[in-house]
Image (cartoon, rainbow, N blue to C red; front, side):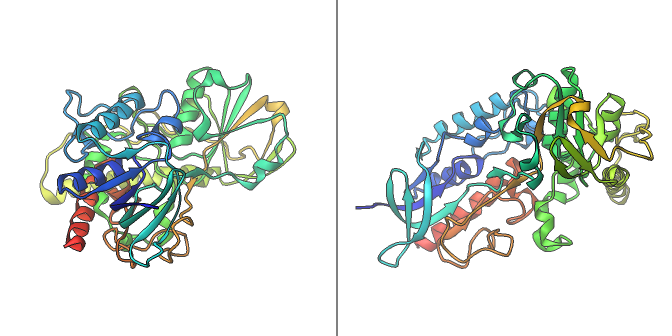
Amino acid sequence: MAEVTDVAVVGAGQAGLAASYWLTRQGTPHVVLERGRVGEAWRSQRWDSFCLVTPNWTVQLPGFAYAGDAPDAFMPNADWIAHLDAYAESFRAPVRAGTTVTAVGRAPDGAGFRIATSAGAIDAANVIVAAGTYQYPRMPAFVADLPPETRVVPATAYRNPAALPEGAVLVIGSGQTGCQIAEELNRAGRRVYLATGKTGRVPRRYRGKDCIYWQKLFGYLDRTPDQLASPADRFRGLPHLTGRDGGHTISLHRFARDGIQILGKIEGATGGVLTVAADLADNVAHADHFAAAFCRTVDEYLLSHGIEAPAPGPDNTDDGGAPFRFPSDPIRRLDFDAAGVRTVIVATGFGFDFRWVRFPVFDTFGFPVAERGATAVPGLYFLGLDYLVTRKSGIILGVGEDAADLARQIAARRG
């Protein structure tokens, strides 16, 4: 006999807990199903020194907003996990830890949903899928051609420099994760090679405010999917950014000045020799143009709204350092033996797989098609995904707003 409840929430991260908070407030019976512990992805898929990349003031979980004395600082991961634990305890969220959901389908009687879990079946009138889009690390095909003695570490499994074999390290991917790991390894005295792609960057602070403050002010975080040039833009790598050491600007220019060997995109591997594309200049220019466009947008907003702010610094896109002069003939071939590379860290983004949700509610990317989180299947909702409703739907700042809306929709559906 299946357990019965009004709402089943899949996932106990910030999105699932925010949904649980509002459901609890309105007295809706529900369960929160979590394969691991509260905030499991934050616990098991982040490195030791990781800090949030958004300021503490963006921690606006409903009923449990940040109330400390450092709103402009950045929480270390341990503090953020503790915050999530305290949040769940504050309203006694009905979290079923260690319960893996394997399928969500139609209930046998045709009304509502049957959720198959590692602890048995649950029937629910409504389901909120809050499992996130960063479900597994993507691995380039050429990784299979690397020498067997090379240690390949997905970014989710990286913990600290001391845990890696001695020798040089190749970091593949120049989004937020790859850049933060490359910076840490370089600071630890490792020889670091960073293979880049076309990823943007933004200054950590500009004209007296954090970049997230400006993005919120001029509406960047409220952009909707239809405002993007292409649906594929929902899944682009996030701009270079870090919250470590109080937050600071990171860039390929700074990395090169600090001794990191910057490469173009890796095209393939034959044994211990990698072929590198001749796109380094284009990748650096892409990041630079992204940063310059961000600064122009802030400047234009301030001017059009008559807002006074400190003048721009000498180079707000690189913490004041002069641009690095990258070679006109970049490295096109990386021999692991000659370079001393013993470890490859793969930070080429994340994928998602919602095939366990057995309803035809997905687009050609496998991303849910939803209006304000509600799919075409009555009672089936999604929450906590980038650009599900707006840009901020997938970040800590925005999940509470979307969760409140879903709770209202469910209340209306329950009558």
